[in-house]
Picture: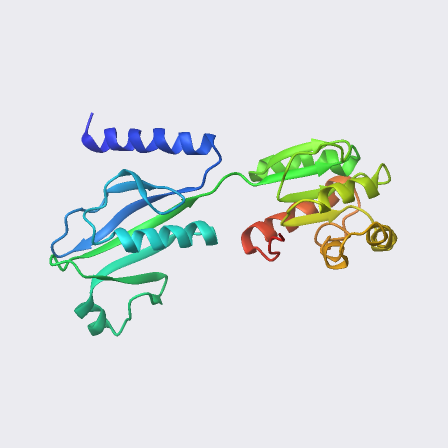
Length: 259
């Protein structure tokens, strides 16, 4: 067994432990070096949610600060990062300032005496997003079956009583405890809440929610009708439209969290 294989096994084992705890982390891989550098292409490391190296090695302290910042950015934005740690005089020759991003590469200053260049690819690994589907309706059942195929961890509850916490919630009770379900989910932090039903029906429910003391701005954040407008008719088509909107929220993060 080669040292690289031993290291890869070590990284894989540590990564699995973090996945089991639903903790975000990232892999870092040196993809290119130029000049004198301690680490070479292929060197890997596992980084925690705070940007610290948990396993592996990426060279000395010259890259540590840039890797930490790139990791934090990757985890926040949910997309990979490519950072080039480059000597300051070379950055000046290129007309690039530290922290600037050019053609998908963010540049950082290498102040170490080695004066080498290290390009590092950071790949974020985020916990599986949680989706709570409330209701036993055909739409609820179709969504609960479809969402796991797109890497959502789904909880399907028939009512809004004692529901688990989730950032994304779809209320598909469809006449079976709609108001109580909405009261329950709106009392918790969320990224996305959608209601399966007509705009007219939700308008009536909104008045009752605000009469019960819920903030009008909070109620207004509920997406009703749920899903993107694809002229869906069947429960399966409606579920597909909701899932499409969930993917949009997940990738674009168009709705901020509330406190």
